[in-house]
Length: 338
Image (tube, rainbow, N blue to C red):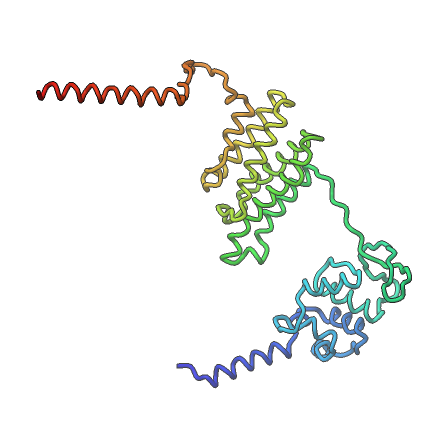
């Protein structure tokens, strides 16, 4: 049996270690710790341990570590601090913290410029004073124009992201393939389908790039059999819609190419059961014109017309005839008995 007192001492020691150490600063070099101290206007002389102690003792810089402490800030929270100051949010944690310290303490070194986010000036009415004031707000980034090359690269990078830490755990590894299929589905629904009317060939090129990137890089996926977001069904429906729209515009060679890369994706996903409930092969056959009702070579067509549905009069006649037959049969039986 374990001693309760020993367990309490263990956790108190661990808590003390977490609250009195700063793994973030310890991972940094001596020069990087000096930069943080200068930016916070703290003494920056002495060994690395003294610099870390000063960062921990300062009320503001201590919130960036120790990591794992309930009161410390994670990277997402630090990025929010940058956004509140109209600062860029790119770079490592050290870059973000240094940027914030330079901004708050007006300590940007001479000859360098503080990296601020792109902003624009807007006029707003100050509710307190009733005056119109100018305010700097972050610019909204323009959405990149849809393109086949961009679609291919996005899917490729998403598949390669399997090396990220969030996909390394047992449960995290199951979400990677779902995220990949979800991205391909998003590219089809948000970039390919909206352009069907205006530029059908662009829609086809985006769809081809997304699916081709998926098939080209499929071998690097670790657990491709999971699709918790339903992306595969969306991919199937989107390809069917695109095929119906662009088929009349394609030459025979283009139709064959279209059908080939659909069949290639079907053959790659089939061993994992990914295409079991899809109509990919039917879509490929439709593109080639194999299921348009025409008679294939050596195939007999049943020219018989389907039977007509019975009407109300037919049902009544059937019931009347059945009743008359019963009456005749009863009369015959009585005569035989007599």
